[in-house]
Image 1 (spheres, rainbow, N blue to C red):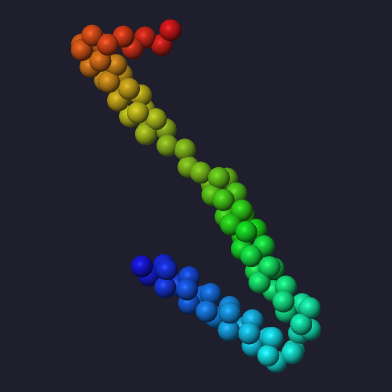
Image 2 (cartoon, rainbow, N blue to C red):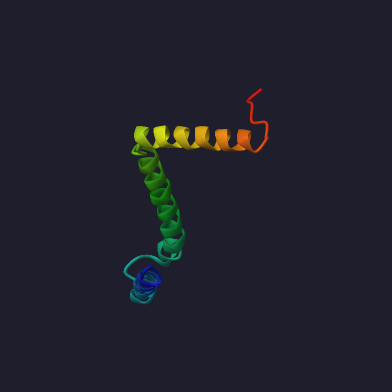
Length: 89
């Protein structure tokens, strides 16, 4: 719930700044009307950047791989005892 409140408050602040720029005429209206589009594009680029960084820093877990292989071997043995064919052919 806290995350939703944070996102909503950020959106309200961005909307207030945008309306303020529209009312104050500091920035030409042609540029001000494009600010929401620029914000969406910037947010998309940021999201793609974070996904890329997350993929580059994706951890490898060799000990978890060993445990998974052990679990697979145990499951195959259990299924063989139950009469299920688990050959990889």
